[in-house]
Structure formats: structure tokens, C-alpha cells
Image (cartoon, rainbow, N blue to C red; front, side):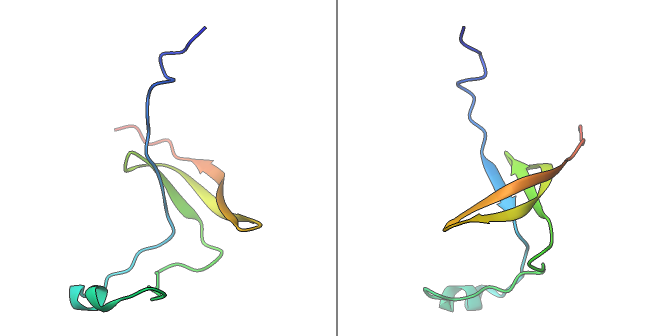
Length: 78
């Protein structure tokens, strides 16, 4: 039996941190440039579904792959 939800696409994003930099500095950046974020390595990340916060998680490294382990589901209904 097929579900009606199978054809629904949702964009998932993970926010590691934020930074504010001047546009001229952004335009000068090249390959290998590092942008400093306002978070530390052990801080939780925010998981967005279609740009809406849905969960918090932790970064998980598995070999050369990076993943997110969900630690909290956000109950925000608007």
C-alpha cells in the first residue's frame, strides 16, 4: 500500500553557527577561506525543515562522513 506522503519533499538544513561579515570581505574569500562561527565544537546544532526549526542535535563523525544525531524534538506549533 502506497502512502500519500511518499511524494512530499522537505528540505532539511543544519545550522552549525552564524557569523556576520562585511560584503567586501566575503567577496575577497577564496577556496580554503575559513569563516569563524559563533559556536564551539561541542555546541548543539539546529535542524530546520523547510526553514522552520524542528529539532536540536549533535554532530556525529563517521569516517569521512558527517551526520547529525537528534537530541531534542522542538514542539513549536505556529
